[in-house]
Each structure stands twice: as C-alpha cells, then as structure tokens.
Image (tube, rainbow, N blue to C red; front, side, top):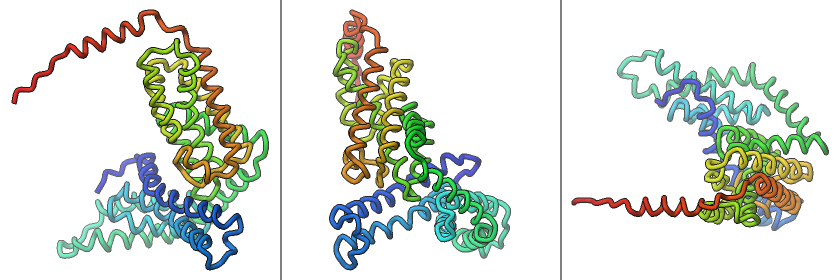
Length: 358
C-alpha cells in the first residue's frame, strides 16, 4: 500500500484530479442542454436537450463519491476505492457534501492503513484481506460514524457556508473574488494557487459556480497581462522574453498560467506583484458582476458555457490591462548590451560540441 503519513494535501489533490473529468463532462452536458433547450430545459421531458441535461445531472451526482474514492485510493491504494465511494455517496445523501466526503475519505483511508498493519489473519485468509475484510470493516466503522455522529454537524456547517456565500452582495463579493484571484496569480501554479483551486473546485461540487470563474480568470490574467506588457513596451524586454511572450499569450487563453514562469523567475519582484494585483482586480470584478463557470478548465473555450460571459470577458480585459500597465511601469529600461550578452551565451552554447561514439 502507499505510504499514508500526513500528506493530506497530496491526497486531496489526487482526489480532485479524479473528480475533474466527472465535473467537466457533467458541466458540459448541462451547459449544452441549456444552450439547446433554454433555461427551462428540465421541464422539457423526453426531448433531446432534456436527455442531455439528465446525463449531466447524473454525472454530477458522482462528483463527491469519485472525489472521496480518489482521496481514499491515494492513502490506502486499491482497498480504499470502494469504501471511499461509499463515504462520498453517504456524504451526498446526508447533505454533508464535499466536506463530508473528504472527511469520510480521510478517515476510511487512514483506518485502512491501521487495519493493514494491526489486523492479523490466518495465511489461508490472506487473499480475502484486501478485497473483502479491510473494505468491509472500514466501510462499516466509518460509515456508521458518518451517519450517526459526524454527518449532521458537517451538513449544518456546510449549509451555513454556502448560504453565507450566496448571500454576499456588492463589495463583499468583490473582496472574496479579489482574494481568490490574487491567490491564483500569486505563485503561478504553486501551493497558494493550488489551495485556491482546491477551494473553488470544492464549491463547484456544490454547484456554486462563481468562484470557479474566478479561478479561471485568475489563471488567465497573468500570462495575458505579461504578453500585453511585452507588446506595449517591447524595448524593455530582451529578445528571449519577447519570444517567451509569444508562447505565453496562447497559453493564457487556454488557462495555462505557467507561461509567465520565465518572466517571474528572472524578475520576481516586479512580475509577481503585477500579476497578483491584476488577477485580484479581475477576480473581484468578475464575481461582483455575477460571472460563474460550470467548468473547471478550458480558458476561452469555457466562456460560452459561463454565466454572464460578457462580464467575464470585460473583467478579463481589465485585469490583463492592469497587469500590463503595472509591469510596464515597474520594468526598467533594458540594458544596452542585454541582447548582445544573450547572443554570446547562445554562441557559447552552440560551440559546445557533443560527440557520441557508437
């Protein structure tokens, strides 16, 4: 079995990676159904749009179970899959949602690890240990614990959080969106970015779409803003940075933030603040204007399926312009010999002769 330890973040991210395809398929089907059948597609029984919407709704019911199964699998390997699925389904049924599913998966995963080390069985029954005994015991123990003790308080806590978020208006929505956007733009795919992403994906599982749109816009603004800065103040950038910007732009359109990394690595004190502020502005405006995404990824390809896509695009443009303006303002003039130095380095690399003797 895999090493358990306390690598909770790793286990959560593994669960999310298994959950995302379910969310994507479910969200796309439901969005496509609304495009074909309108907002009341759920009432058009036995039509094609209604069937597509039903497929999406069916897929969405598996979001928390698959997430929980992924977390339990990450902790305890294959014996964790079935108990994880059960805990996710129980959490869904008792309205404990994402939080209940994650807690159940963690408990069942670590219980499986403990049982594996401490439960002694005759050699003749060792073959049944992983496929029957461990999954059965862990499912019974944690399942009863969830249904009898933990589930209800978690459900109340989660409902309170969701009600608070849905009740947010105006400035409060801007602040929340700005915080999520800033976290997405701060370390460009690093731990802070992943934490914000995990939070928004959790809310997506509860069909709260606003923060997911902020996640996407917070990942798109940094590369688009940096590319725009290079376009506007090209003389401040080296030839290599100009070439990197050409790659960062399409990456940004596809919600791939890592196109900014060459710029952040060479000039972090200017690039990171500009990206963070621009993403915060875009995130705050988008959430305040009601943008929401049923899809967790896709960049510009997800925009047609979003709630209030025009507002999303306007916020994206404003955030990118803010990043570009700040970065262009912060950026000093390029040293006169910057490209010459680069050429010399390139030539020195070209001079390296590598011989392979076969």
